[in-house]
Image (cartoon, rainbow over all chains, first blue to last red):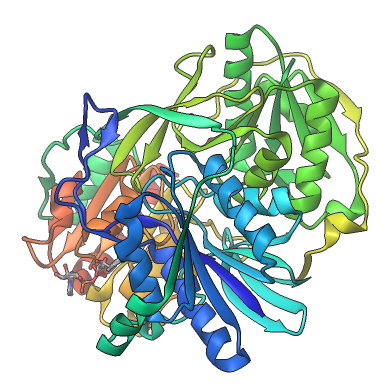
Length: 246
Length: 322
Ligand SMILES: Cc1cc2nc3c(=O)[nH]c(=O)nc-3n(C[C@H](O)[C@H](O)[C@H](O)COP(=O)(O)OP(=O)(O)OC[C@H]3O[C@@H](n4cnc5c(N)ncnc54)[C@H](O)[C@@H]3O)c2cc1C
């Protein structure tokens, strides 16, 4: 089985969010970048397929040279090869078209992407890839098993979960649950050394549409201070009469 | 050139968000000088959409579509859009629509903006406001393609009554076996309980509750309030609660009217998921817990004392206000 894991390079979850250039750009100053958490679960699941079912695992990222440290981390975790599309990932449609071209060329059986990137929260890349390539698709995937060309996936739905049967080639939008948190891997020294030798190809983007653009950013208004109460009676009264929440 | 809205239903009944997206579609249609059409799957009471400004309902009656199937639903919505010549499609933010929307976007070569929190700022260019960075920021985003898809955040716009005359037209989309290449084999869902996605009130517990055996009081409080239950990430990682209840940057977003956080510290990743909630109440024994900075109301106290007493008092309050 040949697997592609789509990796997005996102600000660390503890990052303070600021904007710059007249609030038209995300301020990367002092921000640490990481593998998108949803993708990290997917990458770890791919490692399981590599170890248990001899799968070959590639990763792909759309981004400038600045994303390479994140890609090297994915290689250090155990991916075999990496592909970088040399373009700014400013629009989900554009990113999906780039990845779809790689998937088509590479004839991947299984594509693991994240449910969404935690920065722009577009949640569209795996689904758009699925529609461009007419691949089977399971979103918000929290479990995945593959036997030959048969796949069984579980996806999270509002208020529960749904088991889905389908076949390869398949793309999933993965998330927490795909593997246990405790199974996530931290690259060790040997992995980091090996990652340096692994192939990281850089390709130029194909012509593709840009369907959306962010023209301006804003931060939420500062919050007023909390009203502390000492009794539940007072709380109920405030929730009823002031906040009108009950 | 009408606006098309996908109104979700379950067991024949519209979900609460169906009326919200219908209201949103009506608003967009007005701004564009056109009307709003809904596409509805196996719903009874299609007329009720007329109360929210929908002047036409394309009514699909198809047993194969009784269970949600993303690919088949996307094909049906796409065909409805073509039939209506719709250039703007409106969807909710449920797990199902977030599954369908990108498929539609790909097929229609349409720009898709999810997590939209207000009516478009302008129609030309088509500009909407949405949340980004897991609710730590907002973006004004422009959709530049001919067809546009908008995913409305839960509870952001509200259901707004706007009675119009409605026609209901039967609609049979053309589907084939390839649309069912993913098959639902089992659905495991809590019935009759509010879900985090559409509950007005959410009661959430953190590691401060010490163990799963203490969740009885969280459930009881939720029951008194007609609320959904939720939790912080470590709680679901520890297996005290199901993964689907985990709220935050890597979990679910909550956009309820009231969010009650009990024994949750308020780490930045957790707060990211709750900032769209209108009123936040925190119960925590540590006055320094960061959650107090993000809350509207707070009680510094031991959850094991505060919560049982809150349950009692709320029961009395409900009895008096019934
Ligand atoms: C990549 C990444 C992603 C993450 N995503 C998320 C996410 O989506 N959602 C999320 O929730 N977290 C997330 N986290 C984890 C987050 O950083 C915190 O660790 C987590 O939110 C803490 O959960 P908690 O508040 O339940 O537990 P704790 O931090 O242990 O806090 C428990 C709180 O309970 C209080 N308490 C203890 N006993 C009592 C009592 N008897 N009565 C009242 N109060 C009491 C304590 O004072 C404390 O404030 C993420 C972390 C990382 C690294």
